[in-house]
Image 1 (cartoon, helix red, strand yellow):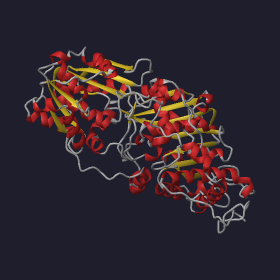
Image 2 (cartoon, rainbow, N blue to C red; image 1 turned 60 degrees about the vertical axis):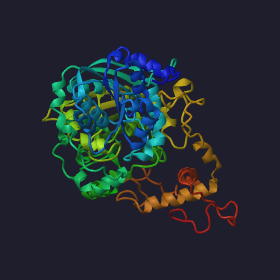
Image 3 (cartoon, rainbow, N blue to C red; image 1 turned 90 degrees about the vertical axis):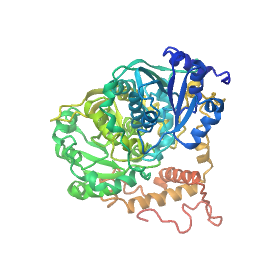
Image 4 (cartoon, rainbow, N blue to C red; image 1 turned 30 degrees about the vertical axis):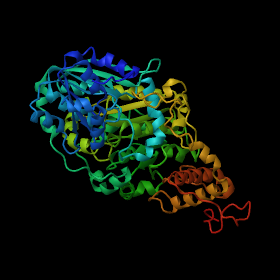
Length: 611
């Protein structure tokens, strides 16, 4: 066997996970998406062993074979393909080879950090069906509650926001609580599950997992979840998908929590009767929107959603509230994660919002985007303001059952928007909310006749606004994100060599690009853009100087502030963001060379409203 060379970090992982698991006595093992890196070390440590290397693509499979040609020639390394349409590809391959219940270990090291829970559970269920009793499952998983994990998820907010609903290179975060709950149901006992770093001196980011299969019969009961799926679906943005499926979203959902239960269990403890300004994110069939308006006749509510069709239908259904200025709608900005915050800051309403709530909507949103919504809320709420929401919980019986029912669909379409659920847990949510300055005052699942037992419902109060302020730069597209410095700035706690520059893969030209943009052009473009938003907005969005269904200073352009001088900074900021996005697409705009210097707009530009 070849010499694998000096690799201190890989050796540290091997010593931590593989050596205590008895690697020298293994005979048949499975490596998932590892390129043969640790499979080769296992073959070297155990001369009688054989490794089935399952890779996600033909290129990856061929690369693994090319890396270990002698092992392939000797029949000790067996490269195989995973199949998005066949969640049971691993199981079927080993059944055909007569190796079911004879595998000593299944492992995926430094390859599962971007695997969402459906993909992880697919691999875990395959492992539980092929491992011998006492066989090991070894993995590394990304945990956002660790020091470096939290820093990583913050750094990724601006980079990944525009890919919401589409597959992309982003981490799929999990927690020890989810891992223990799901593996326990599949017949495993966790023997090691702890945050750890494979680089000395760096804070941990990943969870290092070693689990033993002790009850193989448990997994047999779930074998049907590995049924073949339909062909992968085309990738759509969140707005495109929900517009296409708006009738389904707007239909009354019998499995959704009853509005009266949400009011009594979640909204009344958050003092809904005292709210003056509130925000809802994702309205679905509008039952909770209507309940808040009924419970508090004085509240002014702005609803954010990704779907124009859903907001249009809701505005028509609740036309009286729109006409009275109590209800307005704004689209969620698909490009800028600070869109909700910016909309209220323009009207000087930051720190004046009483509540941000979202019931039975964020269950479809994964954690990378949820943290952006939570940080928007933490920067908008007044001290003592409320955050109320629900998420799907993988640790409950109902959540686990739904996860298995959707397993094939989720495995075939990783990262793509659909009405399937994204799964979290209280142990994952609470540490993150506390870092944003919230204190959780209620968290529970409720009884089946009340809130339902699948989802986790959370009520949290903002008690430390300064915590969110310190993190503002990670959200705002117009600011440079704060840098933590030191070795923890490394973008990956991977087994690859550390880059010489911390966070080297994160582009640094974003803010310098804005400094180079022509300010007059940016102002003119921002003014035209803002005018079109107002002219072509949704019902309640643009009418008689109002925006968002509110009057005067509430989410609308005030009379007397539509002129160039009063709004030039807002126009400049909007225009700079548009120009920057165009530049990232390879499009550059220039002002006319014949334009008289000092004029507020280019020839032919749309004049300010009311001019």
